[in-house]
Image (cartoon, rainbow, N blue to C red; front, side, top):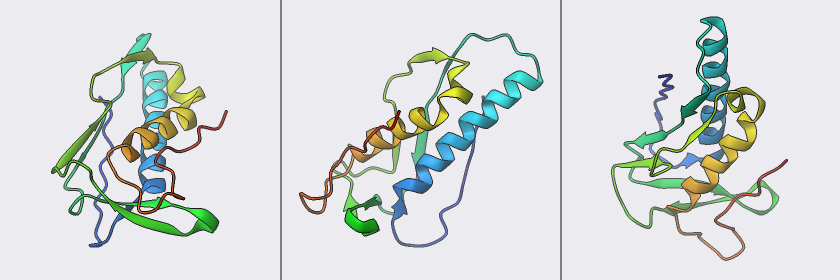
Amino acid sequence: MVVYRTPIMHSGSMPVDIYSQCVQGTLVLAAKLFSSFGIDTRQVCIVARLVNLNGGMLAIPGNFGMGVEAKQKKPGSDIQIPLDLVPTQRAALDSNSLVMAEKFAAELREYFEPGLDRFPRVMTIRN
């Protein structure tokens, strides 16, 4: 198990970009650890668990770099993404870390309502 934990010290919302970067960094670190220790594992399960979400606020990027704060649709103290564990290829941790992190970010955004219609709830996944 590789866990990355970060304190959010301010009282405002958490930008979704920070979450995505944390997920991607954790995936790359996990790939390096598997490689360094010679662990012969072909499949892994990846799960993000967010706790103490500053009252459940997320800063969603919008047009021209401006953002809007959105509250959770279902207020709770923690969020697990994905809800069910799904096995994935270990090799994808390094080679597809950006795509995987953006999928996690897109799912995180599904927990939040958009502030305005022009702020989409699902991020675009780049190839």
